[in-house]
Length: 607
Image (tube, rainbow, N blue to C red; front, top):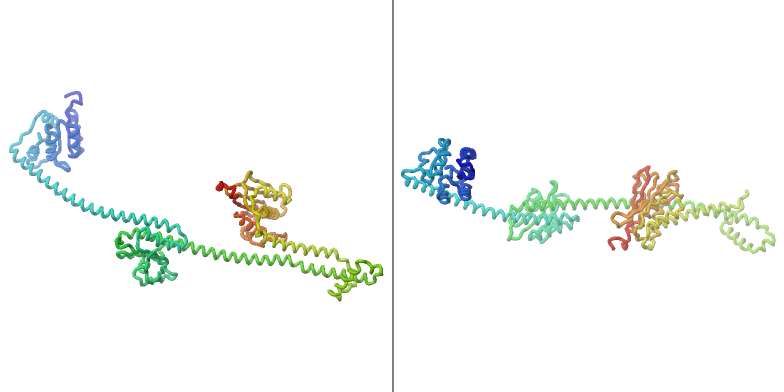
């Protein structure tokens, strides 16, 4: 035995049993370099690649028998001895094996202990002889032919089966490609229709998109009426129906699809129910071109389309109903606000006008009494008095007295002149008239012809607060530097901040720690200026947060106020394309926020 493993002869063992391969590997490790293959095909490839000195193989192998492998190896390795290692105990197993070209035959059951010595002998040139070899060789040839014939039949059947499967695969590929096209078309249609929220537009776009994307001849959408008895044609593209209303209980296509909740299919027409959460909405009817008839395989793709359409229709309906409900609510609120404003207006004007008649009556009575007093005093005037330049004017006054109140006589008791009373009544008349004029100004002021220019809003607010003359420290200004200008009417916007600061100061009603903070900064988007007027007063109750914007509504009670300041602020800010809002926590004050857009000449988008 040589000490160099590289000089050992190479032995290739072809065996499908791993335990047998492991046993041979241990038994022959000292005498051979053992190469292994688990199946005949790998063994043949390994034999060509490694050129072994001897091949040991099992007879019963998968795919090919050991004798078939030997026939191939004799061609590939004509000088390499082949030794069979088998447990085949059938009659003449050795003879059939030797006839296949093996140099020897070893029995797995009896030759295991001497296998190394036996293989070395075969490597050294030993060959087992076979009597009547021609007979066994002829049998071996017949066996090969029979095996070959069986393989041919098997291959033929496999080829036929493969051809059948190939045709089926082609058909399946065509179906899958068609389904893929339908699904892609459905996805495109779904993307279009799910982005439309107007019901009428949705229905018309849906039928047109179905025809264009799928290449259909026509499409139509029927929706159930409120009673669920009729399916009404709501939209159609190239659709030709003799009737626009179909009775659900008797119609064989549209009605049947709705009744049964199932697809109805003919050779070129398909009707799909439109259902959302178990509720039938109507049906989608489609008609294909004659050259591309509809099939049952198409139903899944079109049902997906119908489901998307049903959801889109239902969403559009819900949005329409919601908009109608909102419009009704808004209409009712508007009418309520108008009624409230009208009542408040009548109430305010009535309150402010009420003192005028009484005051005017008192002034008239006082003047008549004064005239009667002077007439009595001048009735016995001397000649010098009668010669006075004012005598004629006094006579005219007395003549007016006679014409207005001929029965007016001087009361018997002493009378004051009444001048102070007259002045007080005139003050009441003046104040009432001025209040009415203020109401008129608040009502129509924002509608006057505006003089819009670019405005330095921070400077405008600073000047407005200064001119209000509030106590020192009552207002703190936190105005950002270098703010871009806004565009609007300076007088009107100044009035907005005047009203907000004035309302805040009056809301605190002289409380000891009364303080107002006015903040101003540029919004993050760079397109708006945010202004906040915050007080630390009692705040606004939640139930009044919406009412404060209504004309003539006021919380000041006997402390005055027309109730038009905030409504005027809202109108002015809206006209300036801005927004005004309020947040308040009772007991912690209120914050009014005014958002005004930066002038387009100064905004980043105009640069």
